[in-house]
Amino acid sequence: MPKKSENNLTWKDLEIGSIVVEPGSASQYRTGDWKSETPILSKENCNKCGLCFIYCPEGCIQPDTEGWFIADLFYCKGCGICAVECPKDSITMVEDEE
Image (cartoon, rainbow, N blue to C red; front, side, top):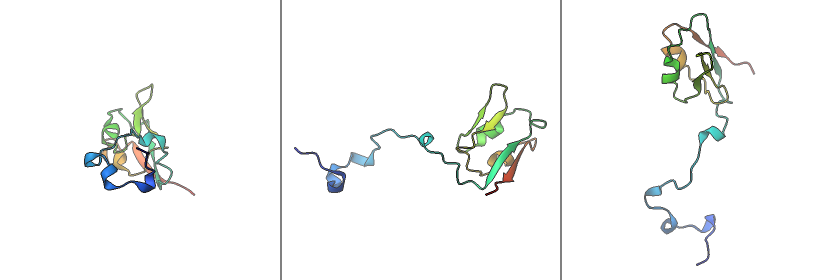
């Protein structure tokens, strides 16, 4: 049976339940390019509690070798949840300049 091109697919050719059959990863795309604010960490106030890491919806905050939690700005979307959840007010959101 000849293979159909994507333009000739019908509903009969789809996997049952619209299952994703190929792996994908958002890490392949730099999703933080459109943010308007950037989180800035003040290490003087930070107690390394990790709440920013836990609450980040994008998973872009990771601990470095010294235990500081640093946002990967290639993936951070600037939502500010980390700054709101920080009990020591160690993270401030700074407006990006164009």
